[in-house]
Image (cartoon, rainbow, N blue to C red; front, side, top):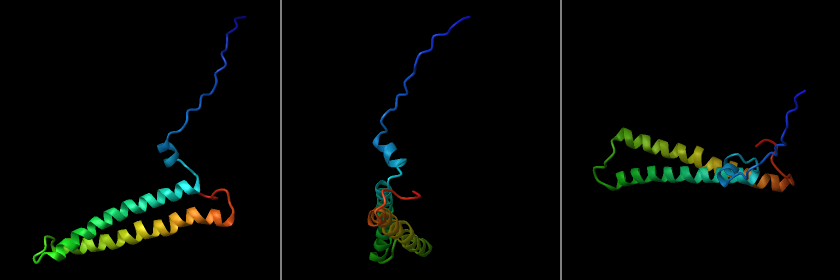
Length: 110
């Protein structure tokens, strides 16, 4: 009977880097940071849109067509409400403070 030498293989777990911990985290504080950074990124984009239509209003002739101006104002308003205010107010503050206020170690459904 032929015997085969088996070698014990140890499972080597590598430490997850910062990016992996950031993307795949289920910690409520890290999820709150994700909401905050997402909201700040879109606030910057909404600020650029606001800058464009404010520059348009500052010049006598303007550099945007009326349709483009209306679309920039509409995009700015929608972006600032749904991609900045709601993620920061509900997502950031909700995920950061509610588990701490009720004494939970973590969120039930991240």
